Amino acid sequence: MDHAALISALGTFLRPDQLLTSDEDCSVYAFDGTALLHQRPACVALPESREEVTELLALCNQRGVPVVPRGSGTGLAGGSVPSQGGVALCLVRLNQILELDAANLVMVVQPGVLTQQIADAAQAAGLFYPPDPGSIKISTIGGNVANNSGGLRGLKYGVTRDYVMGLEVVLADGQVLDTGNKCVKDVAGFTLKDLFIGSEGMLGVITKITLKLVPAPASKKTLLGLYDEMTQAAATVSAIIAHKIIPCTLEFLDRTTIECVEAHANIGLPTDCEAVLLMEVDGHPAQVAEQAAQIEAIAREGGARSVRLAASEEEAQQLAAARRTAFSALARLAPTVVLEDVTVPRSELAAMVAYVQEVGQRHQVRVGTFGHFGDGNLHPTFLCDERDAEEMARVEKAMTEVFAHAVELGGTITGEHGVGLAKKPYLPGQLGPVGLEILKRVKTAFDPKGILNRGNMFD
Image 1 (cartoon, rainbow, N blue to C red):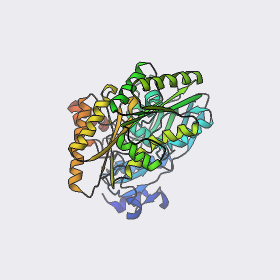
Image 2: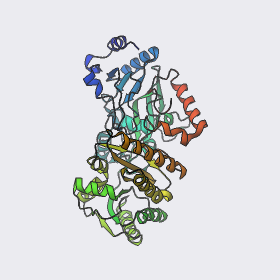
Image 3: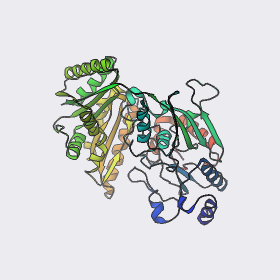
Image 4: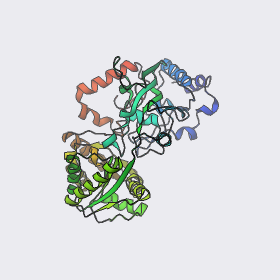
C-alpha cells in the first residue's frame, strides 16, 4: 500500500482537517477501550457526509486498502482497532438528529450521535429510547448498532437490535443500500438490516439509522438488596421472574466490586456482603407500587440481609450510579483492567459466578464480577498489569477457561461487547466449523475484497 498516494487521493475530496496523518494524531485511533490491543492506522478520515463515505470506500475498495469504521472508540473487544493498518474511518462528525417523528414513534439519526443525546431528545418529547449501554454518555449510536449493544434495561426492553427499524449503509464498493423503514410491518424480501446490526463494521458503513421509540414510563421505583451468599441473589432473580415480574433493571455486584465501588463513590454500601442486587420496576404508578412491594417481599424471603427502597429520584440515580461506576471503580485498583463479557442461562448464573471466582483463585489473578443478572450477562473483570508477562499468561488461561465454561453451560462468549480481535480465537469453539463458514460466506457476499475491518472476528 502506497501511503503517500492513498493520502493524496483522499485529499482530493477531504479537507486537511478531515484527514489526519501525523503519528501524534493517528496514535489516538490506534486503540479502543480494550486493554492490550493497539495498531496505528495509515491515516484517519473524518467524513461529514454520506457522499464522502461513498467516495472513500469506492477508492479504498479499488486499491484494496483496509478500512476500519469507528465511533467514539469505547468498544471492549478490539472491534475498531485497525489491526491491518489502512484507514480509520471515524464517523463522529456525522452527528445530527435528522428527525423526531412523534406521530410514528421514530427518530432518524446519523451514526455519530451520542446515545445519551438520543435518550435526552426522546425524553424531551415525552418518549423513551430504552437501550442504555454502560458507555451511554460517550458511545455513538453507530457503534451501538454495529455491536448490538445491550445495557442495564435489557431484561425488560431488549437490546439495540429491538429498536432499529431501518438503516442506510454504504457498502464496501461505495454503493448505498437502504434497508427498513418507519413501518411496523414489512416482510418484503430478506430482513437485511439485521445482518448489519452486530456485524462490527465488517459488512458496510452505517450512515443513517431509523430508531423506534416507545412511550415514556409514568413511574419507577428502585430497590437495593444485600446478600450474604451469591446463590441467594441468583435465587431471588429466578423467583422474581417466576412471579411473572419483569423488572426493567436487575443488576448485581460481587463482593470485590462492591468494595471498589464503595471506595470510589462512597454511597453507603456495606463491604461485608457477598452480593448486591439493583432492582428497578417501571410503568403505571399502581403497577409499579405493587411490583416493588412484591419484589421486596421476594428478596427478603430469598435471604436478603436488607432491602432498601429509594425514597427519591435522586437516591434512585445514586443507587444506579453504583452499578454504572463498577468498571471505573475496578480500574482504580490495577494498571490494566480486562473487562470480559459472557452470558449463560439464568439458571446457571450462581454456578458461573462461583466458577469465575474459583478460576481467579486457581490462577492467582484478582477478578471482580458484575453485570446483568436479569438476562444472564456477566462481566468478569481481571485486575492485572500488562507489564508482567507471567501474570498476563495466567490471566489469558483464566479467561480461556471462563469462555469455555460459559459455552459448556449453554451460554456464549459475548453477550454485548462483540467478538472483535479480543475474542476472535474463541469464536470457533462456540460456532463450530459450519457456523464459522457461513459467517465467512456472508462477509464475502457483501465485501468480496475484504477491505472492511479486515482481520476482525475471523481471518
